[in-house]
Image (cartoon, rainbow, N blue to C red; front, side, top):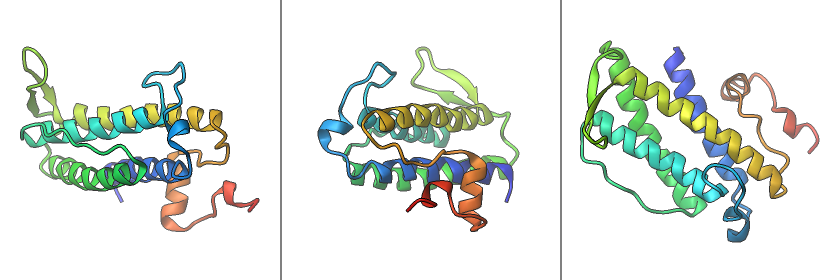
Length: 170
């Protein structure tokens, strides 16, 4: 497995695990506001997935199609769909050696060129940043037992090398 596949796999799996951990939360807890970036768990998850959808449309050079659905099941479906689409374009860019080539970000005014590699890296690190915020909000609504979200932890799970530490006390 190459580095890109590790980053893509970790990104999707970790976001999915956090969404799954939030399934039991009431709408009130999902929408509770905090003094942090997107303000609530739901808004943060929507922001992350919206960004994946927008950037993937830009990378494919297709019109940006805004998606809807902000329930946990809808967000899980959107994540599955966009993760496959994003991974497909990211792998194609890698396979053809186009990381340094540019696409036009038509959402900028005026439109500006951006590198494919920069956009792929931006999207993956953007989600990592927001997952850290999600974990803080989860703890503040009482979900203290959750994944750490690190890449080596994901790799251990993905390859069956070890049980996650948070399952030891169950």
